[in-house]
Length: 271
Image (cartoon, rainbow, N blue to C red; front, top):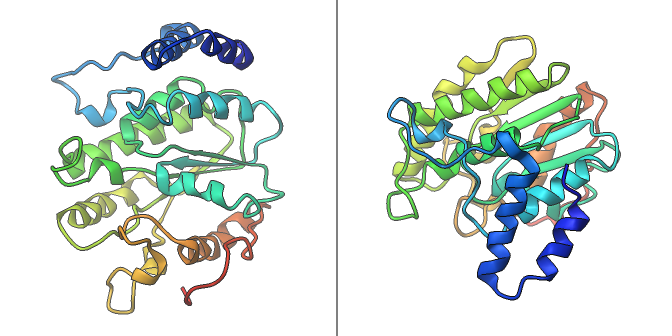
């Protein structure tokens, strides 16, 4: 593996942002060699299963390299994989104290980006007790975003391929797939529901489970509980993460892991 310190030294010699970004990706190619997956199209497969690195320069490759280094610093018992909704657990560093957790959430990630990270070292050498996965909401955005929404069946296919990779690479770990959290009413949320209806098929009753936590984020009438969300009605606020932590507690305790329910700031409203 190419040393992260050497990577940072190379960046110090760059003089322009363009040169810096070019050097970052050159280093990743050197780091991962034949495992590098070029962003090419395929008529036989949907884009949701074609592994590509995230195009978001704010987070990649720097966050990926940071997590590769973190994974080597000690025993990892709990791995969370996802997008910005998972990444935001990093705002609550005491939430999983004592559980040896590794947060592999990257903002903006879609299924194809998670697949790329897994194939490029993200979980190499690990053997956690528990791995949780929630991904797909960024594949569902309305067409006015940076890319058009994917078909729910293709998103499900992308999640399925990720789960297969996890099963092969982490044979001693329990994998739990979470349903995608509800978002504001509209076409994107209808696509969320369509994907979620398919996800239970991925549970095998042995090493892979599916859990739908969405009742924790919905009202008694089945509508999104706005008190748990930020203004965009996509990302959770402090109360939302407290609700998620409460929902996680029985699962984590099953594997000897812990969650601190007092790590989420001043309570705004009951979950």
